[in-house]
Every structure is written in C-alpha cells, then in structure tokens.
Image (cartoon, rainbow, N blue to C red; front, side, top):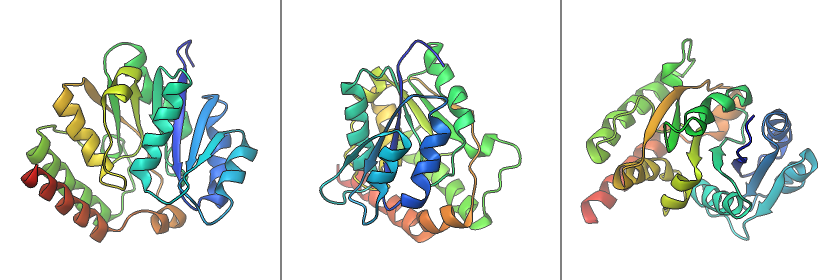
Length: 226
C-alpha cells in the first residue's frame, strides 16, 4: 500500500467462525494484523493465528474498547505509523482500507472515520438507522463534533493520534469517547464513505438498539459528573 507501516487492529470475542476469513481478506492489503482475543470461550485465538495474524489474549473479558486499546499499544510498540480499526464479524470491506488510510498518508488528517451514510445504497436496517441518526445529534450536542456516522468501527488513526487518544471506556462507549478525544485534543479529522454489510450473523453479533441507548445515557452521565 505505502512505505509507511500500517497495522490493522481487530478486537474479537467468540469470532472463531469468522476471524479466519476476515484476516485472510485483509492480509493481501495490509501484512501487519493484530487480533486481540477478549477472553473468548471458543478458538478465536487459534483461528486468528492460523490465518496469519499476530494474536494476543486478554486474561479476562474486558470489552471492545479495552481490546482496541491493547491492540493499539501492540501496534505502536511494533512501529505502526497508521492504525486501522477493523471489525471481526465480516461487516467491513477490506478493499476500502486504502481509502480510509489515504487522508492520513497524504497528511490531511490525524483520524479518518468511516461513514456508512456517505455510501450510496447503504442497507442499514430501519431501526438501526434511527438509533444511529439519534447518536449523530447526541454526539454533536455533547462534543461539538458534527459527523454523519458516529458509531462506525471502521476508522484509521495516525501514530500521533493513536498516542494522543486515551480510551478509558472498556466497552462499546469507546466509540463516543474517541470522538470526545478528537475534540479535546483538536485532532484533524475527516469522514470517508465505507460499506457496512448487514448479514444475519453480524446483526446477531452486534449491539442492540437498547444497548446503544444505554451507552448514550452512560456518556451523558459521564459528561454531567466530570
């Protein structure tokens, strides 16, 4: 892709059935992949290693935010110039990685956020779309950062951004926290269109709309009490 060293970070929990194919789809594009097994109950770790990824395991289940933090630390320690967050459930398109990292490699952004709503033909289910649209308004009001998609896990960070951002939210609230960190540190950001594929598998694995609302409440409470 580029003489810069790009690393893919994948947080995985009980993804034995998908992680091998996800890693295989990424390897022809980016050779450096670390899968963080968040104390799965299946053979996620073994499958990730067999597919060719670096793989490390949490001794206890901590959540996606914590797994991404662990993976970022690992990638930075191994010389990453750019870090890409990529989902383990097959929702993301590896062919779009080059478009997600390009603004960083060209020097135009510190963080690139994928947006499913900038892509024509997005098949976002109606209820999920409504929750995500509410999240856009909620994030804008709380952080002052106006985006078209606030909870998309497909994102890229420069080395500077990865070293600057602090993820304290262990679980799904980390997505909102990253946006807060962008605003707090004045990091340059941009959005690019990406495809999110909604399969029966990914929908069953993804967070519920009720959980998304609960996360929003947690972030609001954190803001009010900080």
